[in-house]
Image 1 (cartoon, helix red, strand yellow):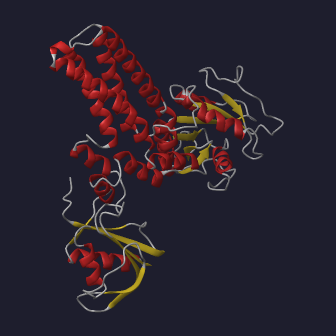
Image 2 (image 1 turned 60 degrees about the vertical axis):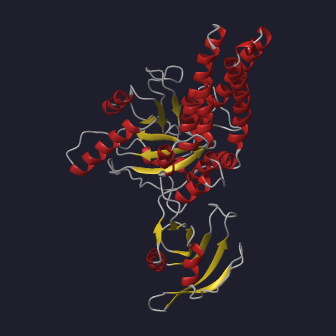
Image 3 (image 1 turned 90 degrees about the vertical axis):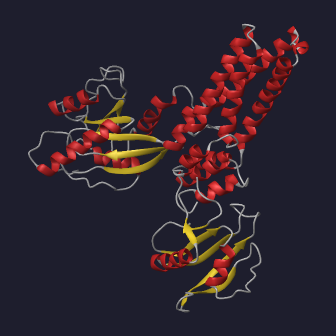
Length: 458
């Protein structure tokens, strides 16, 4: 974990040239550093108010920039500490110079996620809300933004809190029974506790099951277009993107490298990759492209095997289909707008491996909606939830599953009339697991690992 007695500094806007660059400082010396930068020990900024100030290099007394500065007084700030924001002109050289000066004034560079970590440590937000900030920044679709915003408002905590309170009531009652022998559980209360534990298990299991849909919104699906040269992979790639991203020619082997773009399919982010045509080649560059195509195919969640439906199925097509046989895949029969088109090898819309075959025309934009729906189909597994709160974080899902298992273990022991002492072990583990989701019982080591995935400056 990081020492919170330090004053930290970081660029909070993306690196690179822009109209504005925001530098953020947090910690006990933030206001002193600001006064040094504006060359005024008596400067008393009004909290939460932007002021136009001249920033001065304290060593040379030269003007650095005309910037808007804002002071957020502890504890009413993002981190709960004194926070300074410098809204400077967005020159990378200028921003680097100002950060270097703050470092010489005893600030230190913030680690990834350290501002958010301080907010959690100082009680300004719960851990789930801090993680939602990261998800909001990384969101690729409006649906992912919506889910991250709901979590940022604390919905996960509000849903879990009643379960924690019910668990705590049961634990207190069992602890009382254990402490005072004469206070044994009557049969009626024993049955009520069993019903409560069953209800808790059902509620938490239901929440955990939303992870399949939630993971799709957060992480997306990796889809690779594969096929022999000149079947229309790049044309289909461009059509799914809605603009000309890949070069398309009639010359076989035009695509030599992989091209990757994100697209939105019904709110699910899809990482779509166009690959080089798979074939044996004596061209060294094309051979490298084919190797990359095979690596992308191995790493993809789903393959779209593109076949030219206006030509007979050739040996090259058979090679690609053979390589895709053991992977999750669908077949796109391209060029269905041509008179020579034929649904080769399709048995009731499926190939020999049972994978779906879809007729499309990349040129005329035919069949694309059917293809998009087919991309999502293998991942929904009957769970097409798009309303309500979804669990999008693998850490939350794992802790929910562990809590469900721990409660289930205690439920079985209670049904078998085991001693309260044994029953309480699982209930305490479940309560600790639920607390770890919101950060109440999370260890420093785990916190450090979580916040290391954040961007610097957040």
